[in-house]
Amino acid sequence: MGSTRFVVSILVGAFLGLSPSVSAAQTIPPRPNLLFILCDDLRPAALGCYGSPHVKTPEIDRLASEGVRFQNAFCTTSLCSPSRASILSGLYAHAHGVTNNFTEYPAAMTSFPGRLHEAGYATAYFGKYHMGEENDEPRPGFDRFVTHKGQGKYFDTEWNVNGTKRETIPGYYTTVVTDMAMDWLKEQQGGPRPWCLLLGHKAPHSFYTPEPKYAHAFDHVKVPYPDTAFQLTGKPEWIKQRLTTWHGIYGPLFEWRKQFPDERPEAVIDFENMVHGYWGTILSVDDSLGRIRTWLEKTDQLDHTIIVFMGDNGLLEGEHGMVDKRTAHEASIRIPLIVRSPGLPAGKVIAQQVLTVDMAPSLLELCHVPPLTGIHGRSWVKLIQEGDPTWRTSWFYHYNYEKQFPYTPNVRAIRTDHWKYIHYPTGDGGPDKHLAELYDLKQDPGETKNLILDAAQAGRIGSLRAELSRLMASTGLTAETDKMPLDEGIKAALPDQKIR
Image (cartoon, rainbow, N blue to C red; front, top):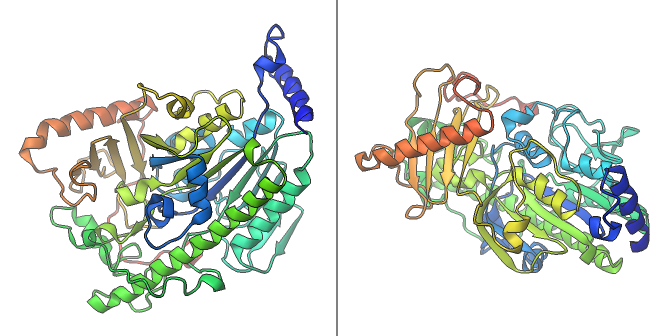
């Protein structure tokens, strides 16, 4: 199989116009397979290798011990569809256009799996895609594409199987999607082309429903509201207003609480049950990784395969009195990212800030495929292999107010290695309607003390604002081009049942 793939690499090199004066062996090294596993709303803190004292994830932890774990990985927009589009394209949301959960990834826009397909890879997608809420049809760049409409269900999801049929497959989502992915992998075994498989788990997205064998795995664990849920002095008023909404700790908690709002201390049991359910879904994801890894070992493909395990965005689990994501606070923007790959060291932890937009250029470099052009991300391969003194020390985050989920304002923020500045544009060009936030992340990683009104920080605030403007402008966002919805304020109404 290896020699066949080598010949294909030579042919692809000729097709892409590589110089015939350079030997094929020098031009294109043998191309690895790529297994890309994407979880939905996965907090790093819910994994053993990121420090969870309760959630045991031996397969994910083993992947981290054999590969590279990124300690400070972030999404550039903490929302499913925009973040997934940034992972595929290497672009910020305003550039790829998927700024909410209802917009389709542009069919004409190149993605990293599309580029791999052009370069001769067999490509497939199985699971939650979630760009274009009601579209479950195959997307360009994939030989096999199996997904569903909307969020899917933890049990008995209806799947569109490569555009040929819609079929409700009985069983637990994580198991079913793993079965389908493994069936496709077996079809590729011994084939002439390297493969790229994207596996999109529903877990651990709400509504959190563990597999029956894990339904009571955490019954013994007490889960209080986090301390920061009550440390709201000096915070913007909209955060306090959010407390009793769909995205607040006193609200429905994704239907784990039936009578709401409920501010009683005893109501923490509903929060605890919600967290237990969330954790339980992750155990099945760990099992899934173990099944695929075992097969790769048995077929002698493990050490010729890049394995990526990551989340699309973070999740607030009571921090600052909030649930869900969307905000620029740490729990909302932090994602887990682990990469095991030929040519990368084992057991290494990267402290520098890496972003969702860095995935496309990095994976294409690891696969020895020409890069995408005109993107915002950069490859972290050099950073891992030898260090990179030019690596970023600051980046910007943005989110646009959603009328369907009116619980978070427009957000524009900058995060440096030391500081975070967040402000909330109204959307009409006028003054911000909410108090801004400033945090010293070294001294206050929990973001408990808002320093925005501290006169001693005036110079720093000015510098951060200037850097935020510079970073945004470098991606095409200026005062004239940064269009956003009008912030209509925090509202109490629940979102439509069909889009929760």
